[in-house]
Length: 265
Image (cartoon, rainbow, N blue to C red; front, top):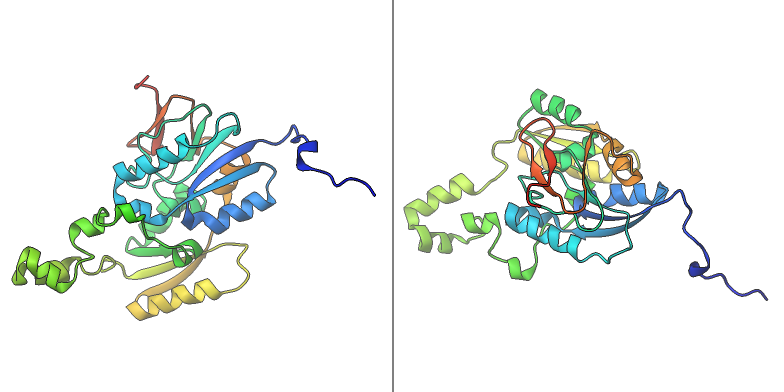
């Protein structure tokens, strides 16, 4: 009987690389699908979507902490599954390998495949709320040591009526509750971004029901995995920023969204 083969007996094919993907959990299904069908070896490190609620400085610090904790000499590059996200990736520094990020303001661009398509949809209907499988099924909570530190907490959105009255007085509490109670009050339309690998209409039906409950218009549009596919495949063209070791990411304040910066060196 022959000896079972061990992984260590095999060498990695010359045509493949090993990447570390640090991404928001809303991209979970898309990135797992692309990893399973792609050529390269990709190690996933997921961060809660609730990270966005901590504000840009805390968000950036958490992602940098994850980058710095990666083992040395293992990965050929670190990939970020984030957009600029209100400057939540600003200041991130590449370690010993390149740090790669799509040129996108937020994750919606990643689901739609390009900044141009997102701009077209936004200009056509600005009061639109977008949903995908990740936003429907992934938890948006934060770590216990961040409780009370989110933007919503600082604004008092998590307070009970009694707590609002104690902090602001009854008259002001009523105003705060009415003004800040519903963060979706400026939306009138919900768009579900449907991915090609979805097996049935379960998530789309859930999104449609949510729109009906709010009295919103509902629409479904096909998603486009092009940006995420190129990110994971190592095809980093003009739609990506590649920060070399020691460089940091900075907002570009133009159509490029984000750029590498070596001014701190």
